[in-house]
Amino acid sequence: MDLRTSYLGLELPSPIVASASPLNARLDNLKRLEECGAGAVVLPSVFEEQIQREQEIIDALIDRGAESFGEALSYFPAQTAQGFDSARQIDLVEHAASALSIPVIASLNGVTDSGWIDYARAFEAGGARAIELNIYFIPADPEVSGEEVERRYLDVVSAVVDAVDLPVSVKIGPYFSSPGHMAKRLVAAGASGLVLFNRFFQPDIDLTTLAVEPSLELSGAYEKRLPLLWIGVLAGRIEASLAATTGVESAADVVKYLLAGADVVMTTSALLRHGIEHMRVLNDGLVDWLESRGLDSPDAIRGRLSHGRIERPEEYERANYVRALREYALH
Image: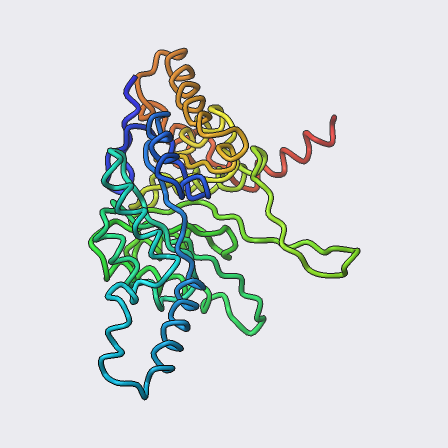
């Protein structure tokens, strides 16, 4: 069985990718993921807040010594510009790129175009094969328009694309008034691929402390419906790779995303829930499904059930919604 897949212009040995998670922060885990069949790995993100905080620390240290002798500048090592904690992530890129034969994708998470450029270039120098931008912006200010939100995304993409020679993918959420149109704008700004979708942080309220508290739950298979819809709608209609993420629990979920038109399928929650060996389960399950139907590669099914290739494309649209409601009422 030939599982080789093209993503962002890179050749992957499998269409199943280990997306960014705490598991991917250790080199031994990355090696195990490769052994279990991962087509590529996305490293944990450097967050914009980290970059800003590190710069604040650097500025404070420099200001503190502003009236000292000139040679005091030598107290600051050459790598100071790379920051403190996130320097370890740059090291991880270098070590992973050297140790793995599969593509290593570096990740940046933020919402403005400031502070990202140096890190993008450092990742490129460290051997990353691509950069994933996880643009995470919740427009809590009601004065911010939809156009301003979209412009912020486009500015980030343009800034990073202009700074590096690597392919750049963009991980976005579904909350645009026209996700398809926004996808085309991101590709026009230079994105080589889109990752659909990230899961926005949704806080809870503690009734004992009467405080807003963080709440993060692993995704479940039921959550794949929304990205499945938009993968199916966009497949074959934009000039970019499509990566599906969210709700990938089993090989069946992988197959469904491929049928909709995904180039690769990313998973995090299933690996955290079941362990790294689950990557082998997903790959073996995909092979079994294809072989049972006499198929020799994922290309044989990729996009077969996308919006542009099915006989009734309205199945992706409102007509199918109305039919689903009617059928449910009959039960």
